[in-house]
Each structure stands twice: as structure tokens, then as C-alpha cells.
Image (tube, rainbow over all chains, first blue to last red; front, side):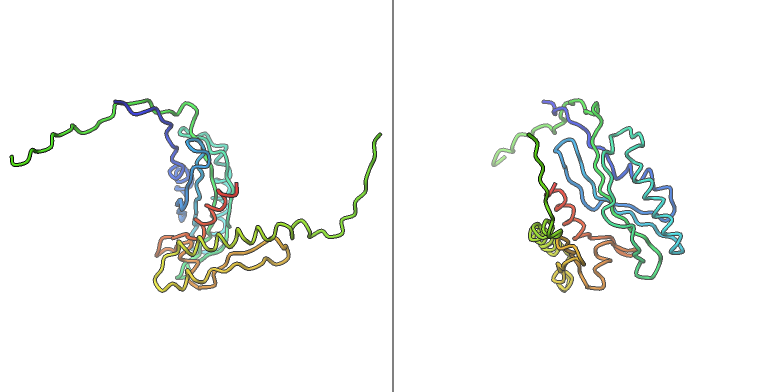
Length: 137
Length: 98
């Protein structure tokens, strides 16, 4: 028995982090995701926080991140294609409870796999069946 | 034979007022969805989502929550991860209305 061919879902969260993870004070995570066109378009809702020692520096960092995020569709990606990027909230000022400067932004990003990104069928590896133990054995 | 017509718009707000009830219904669904998925300790946060009219546009409604710690539950902080009940409700609404 083999598993059917399937298309690998591109890991957008990792791709975003690969692009912005080098910036000090930036964190990102996906808080919602769904299939927009099943098996092809995946939409991700990503929050990016930009923290720095001063408010102006945090603001500049958030703007730097925004430019990178909006240019994701133009950056070649070996795992897929970014086909839509839209800021849905922010960047807005949201300091941490201790007053530490932070700007927060949320984006909706849609991606699709590469056309030749199918994973070939592979033999399924099921554990060998065991015979049920007979009663009274 | 070509003819032309001239119309005078007497109420510029009419198109927006026509869709306002639907927009309000969407906002109320988002607020209810957010409330249903808000973590509950006392229930204060989940019970405090409000839908209020926007400033000038009759077809703009805001989903707000006046509880002081709502922003940290929604967006997280350096101490706690974000729960994002409203963000997830918005994401579902954006998908549903597409």
C-alpha cells in the first residue's frame, strides 16, 4: 500500500522568521491559519512585535519589518510563493506592562506551493499486524 | 439614437446607510466569536466586548473591549503569550466574507 501524491504545504512561519529573525528585538508568530483554496492557497495571520530601548527605535524597527514583510512577494522562496501580503493592524504603539517600548503589527499573508512541489508517493510504513491473543492462553 | 440622462445625488450617505445593518451584523458576529474564544478566569473580559458605531461613516462599526488588560490578552506581552481571541475572530470573518 502506498500513500497518495500530495503537495507539501510551505512553512510560511519559518520563512517569515528567516527574513526578519536577524533583527534584534523582533518576534513573530502565527495566531491563525486556514486554507483559502483547499490544497493550494494557505492564509496565515502573523503578528510581529518590534521592541527596542526607546520608542523611536521601536517605531523604526517596526517600519523596517513592514518593508521586509511587504516585499516578501518579490523574494524568491524555494518552498513556495507569497501571493498576498496585507497589514491588517498597525504598526501601533503597545508598550509591555513594564513600560518597555513595543510596536505591534499584524499581517495577513497568503501563500501557495510551487507547481512542482508534489511529494512523490511513498510506501506506507504500517506496524506489522499482531494476532489477537487467544483467550485462555 | 443615443440619449443621455442626468442624475442628481441627493443623499451621498444612502449607499453606506443601505449596507450599515449588514456591517453591524458582521461586527456583532465577530464580537460574539471573540467572546466565545476568550480565556475565562472571572468572565469579565469575555463579557465586555462591545460593538459601537464609527465616528462618521454610517457603515463603520468598531469592536472594542474597555477592560484594561484586554490588550495584553489579545496581543500578548513580554510576560505572556497572545491569546488573540479577537484576531482569530477577525481572521475567520475575513475568510467567510471573501
